[in-house]
Image (cartoon, rainbow, N blue to C red; front, top):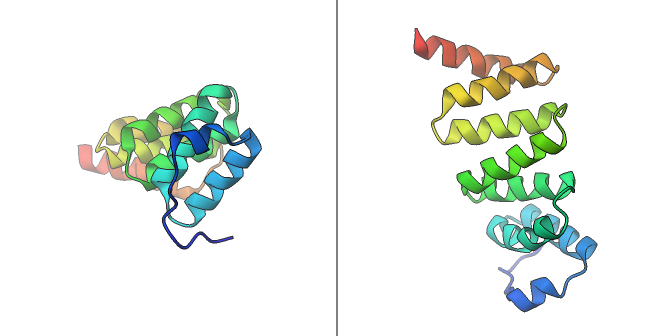
Length: 134
């Protein structure tokens, strides 16, 4: 389903949602290019379910898409804590650090992701950081 008009969300309407309903609605919002609204829906869900990796992943993606890079970084750090063997989580954390011009820190995450067999792009990002340092 595509949401065509910017949704009007109140704190009350967000709190009234069941967890699965909130998660699915946030997915729709993010897919429809309303990342800020998706993050608003997901924040209370992340507080209510702090061990739910899927919520943290979607929250990180929403913040990243909204260019809320600090909150995206924190969400992806939480995701890495919950799923330390997830190459995708490492890549996402690395990208959020890269977007904040913290390339050395990002390279560490890309290096770990590359070692886990993630995309060759992770290895390329590490090479670019090393080239810039030379």
